[in-house]
Image (cartoon, rainbow, N blue to C red; front, side, top):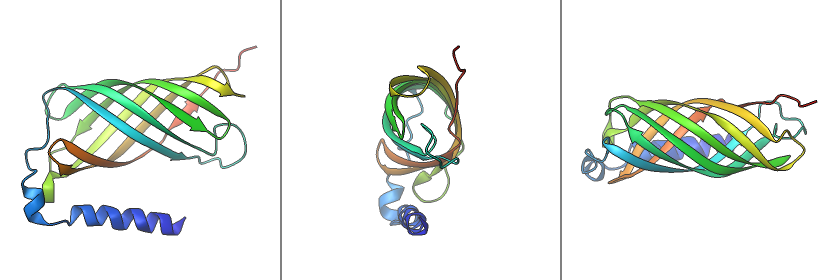
Length: 164
């Protein structure tokens, strides 16, 4: 596990300290007007760590259609598919985010976001519908015009009400 974090940290630093010439051409990459699409690969690891359904971790993919309300404020609706240790689910969610002013090489931006919505069970031994919330923070790093990578850390929490 320690090696994984070392690799992620090294990759992150390599992106930030890439050549100034290449990154300076990307200084106006941030489209902050109108509609945008965000496709994400998701990877999570649970804090509980036991063998109960949906507590060890998940992987998945999601897509979001968003709208820039201002140069810093965005909102959107998303959907995807997530594979847990005890089930598979489809998330339908709302996301709101605030992006701070660009800084450093290539106009990297710090952001805070919050996702909230419903998880609909496809299979497994969990409730058919669960509510989730995910506050997170991270960095958006430009790679090319209209192409960014973001690294974030969140607290993805699920809530279910047992049906009698």
